[in-house]
Image 1 (spheres, helix red, strand yellow):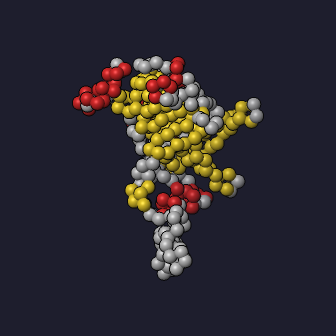
Image 2 (cartoon, chains in turn red, green):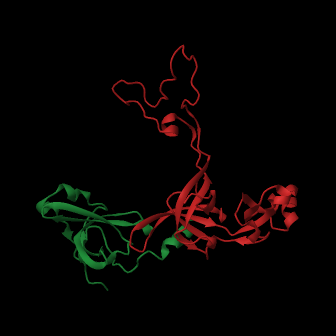
Length: 209
Length: 119
């Protein structure tokens, strides 16, 4: 990983490319982020940087939080993420990371928490087929057969059944940065990204591009 | 957040086009790229629908060409529109003129709106 930033999903819109084609984009308010802590090989066994995004309100600062930020003398941040960047030595505690680390036409990965769907059936959760809705079928959106009878006399592991869906960590690979607005700290990323509007996402350079 | 979204698309919204209303007969001059050459193509027809808002707004223009109905959905803020001319103002009572699709001949026409002199 060469570069990474924390951002807030603002929403989706569309813009016109230079050839007049419509490009669907997601707007992400990315950064400015601050380097809060550096982990080193000697002290922690690996190298990484901890990055914070948006300041924490005064009333939400507890003593343990205060202690963590006082160690490095940075302002308490609401969202913290740790990144094992290739070149951690180039960053110092207190350095600011802005969205202009990314450029137009860069490929990025976006990590977010998907929208919650509650307790969902198999049709929604695993995209299984449903039964006929009419002609007396009586079988509409069920999970299907549980398996054979006395052999194995149990339901096989991995059988697709209803359960909780959503609120998962989801990574979308190889999205394109359409525009960088350094003035307003905005990244315009082509296509959809996980999570609701206002959700916190991580944008990093594409690792599989 | 919504204001921010508007601000992003603000500079791409076109203000140079004339006021157009449903039922108007429009001449839409579209820029067409052929290889490395660019030319302007005319599409003339009745404006039968306007949809969405802001940067997403589109118009549906219908014409009957060689006996076949042709409808084009054009993003109104597209840079591919060279210009739009209104050749006839129409007098209509609804926002979507989809009923024109089922009609042929004289009944498929839109009455002309007689506009008084503007002050």
